[in-house]
Length: 109
Ligand code: 2BA
Image: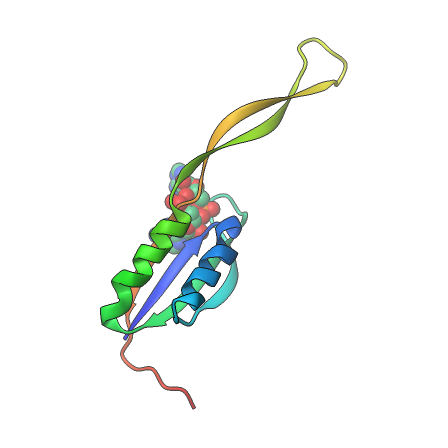
């Protein structure tokens, strides 16, 4: 048995959980905080048979793949008195950090 630990963006978490459970896997969601940005992310614990790990990794890759997104960022109008104009900027979103850990023993009592 393996434990897949996936740290993903909050925005991707629900889609990923849905996809994982639809495919018959079991998952636990933890609300976590990144040490660098000190902002929220989501850690999923997925216990899975060894031969199914690649299937789980493929789902994570599909749902969480890095992509570009246009967001609207307010920018101060030069020389104005606090008037802000939104302007579009392209940012990278998505991606996942995944650890696959050997599980010595799993019991459910
Ligand atoms: P990522 O490398 O994609 O990491 C996203 C989150 O995944 C991290 O959030 C952390 O919660 C977790 N994570 C990544 N690698 C890990 C590991 N080896 N062990 C445990 N948890 C791990 P943050 O720590 O808030 O980092 C957010 C983003 O800031 C990172 O995205 C990376 O792009 C950047 N970053 C992190 N540490 C950095 C550093 N020392 N210097 C420059 N940029 C850094």
